Image 1: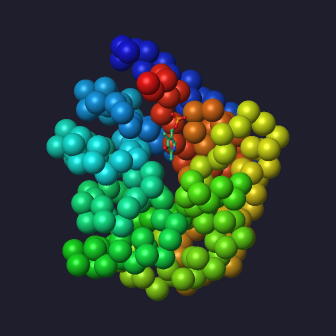
Image 2: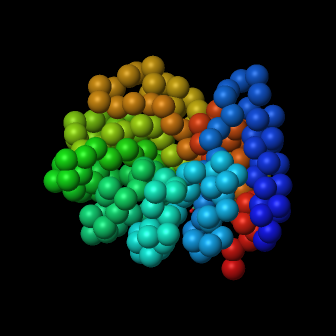
Length: 228
Ligand SMILES: *Cc1c(COP(=O)(O)O)cnc(C)c1O
């Protein structure tokens, strides 16, 4: 893809996000999901004002890090195994997929050992598909309370991956539920927990997510084209 194509795609996505959120919420931040794409493909994003990228595999982050460090902030958006935590703590700006206490505790202890706090989001499963990861919606508050005392974590909000479906009404309702949960938890104001970020919406549904007040959307194929 040429840099002009990339510029045009990013521009169209930004316009769509601004329109979808207009009058209700600030436009969400665009996180470019760069998994499967090379450093060479990723670098042009920098001049287009996209400085935050999403990756879903620890190994892939490690491989690309030398080419990306200092240029991009990397969000880990995929499932994370406990035994991989120490390989990325400190190299990513945020871990968006915290959904179990053992994982939270491992991030906490690796962070403390390095004297840092790691920004994280709690992954919620909006449709209860917890086999894919994520805390059930109705257990989210309890889970947040269970990790609130872990000083190595800087809990900033929630993340959600929607089910694979073409049912727009279903998705609309699930995004709405996520925003309501987010607002309710913000009002509850759990000590040690910040509710500032709501990461939801991908290439197929980022406009619905913006309409319902996502603060960041994670967009891959709408920027780079379909992955093989
Ligand atoms: C791959 C991925 C995305 C981006 O998906 P696209 O449909 O390509 O935009 C977003 N979030 C997560 C967790 C992903 O794994």
